[in-house]
Length: 224
Ligand SMILES: C[S@@+](CC[C@H](N)C(=O)[O-])C[C@H]1O[C@@H](n2cnc3c(N)ncnc32)[C@H](O)[C@@H]1O
View (cartoon, rainbow, N blue to C red):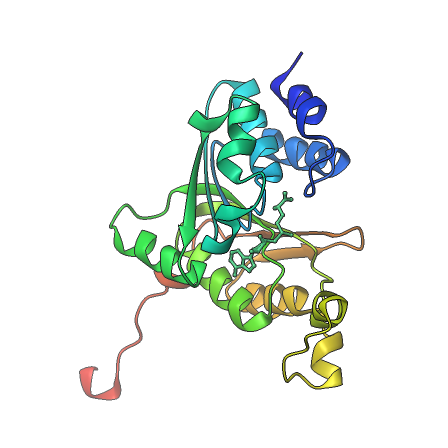
């Protein structure tokens, strides 16, 4: 039995990534030969376990995954989920005390430069945060690397109406596809090839030659 199948057999009923979605992500990871992966948003760690299983089955690779500290007390927690399928060694979970953007900033500042082949983006959050996440992830992606997003058509209304606690967004903002907006508007402007599909997947490829942070600084008039 492959590790991937073991994850389905053991974690099938856990909330999170469905097996068919995991298979699609698996094809993408294999097709692009990705070995260093980043994940934004892990909840119980089911998608993390699937990604780790893909890496385990190919015998190489590592996943770094970030979520907020409040998911540490979920049952099961990501640590328990990964232990159940024997995949703890393939994953480094990071619990952000407030915002994962802070953890991304720290990674950028550690001086190790670009390091990820693929970022799986499943944060489902407002464009304010998604947009900043996109820019920060860009600084960590290798040239030609990919951001794969789940739920580009997520809306604030979908998420908050269910919980009946609405932040002060007006009706138009609540219906906006925030993740899609952040990807299309930012991605296009920084030279990414973006493709947002109608089946819940979005793909954005970093340009091989020029990333957001590689752009040469322009000269001020007094410097010319
Ligand atoms: C849809 S769930 C993730 C499910 C998981 N990827 C899976 O398929 O098993 C979204 C998660 O993103 C987290 N989240 C929301 N905004 C985030 C952000 N800006 N950065 C990182 N995680 C975020 C939430 O705490 C939540 O656990």
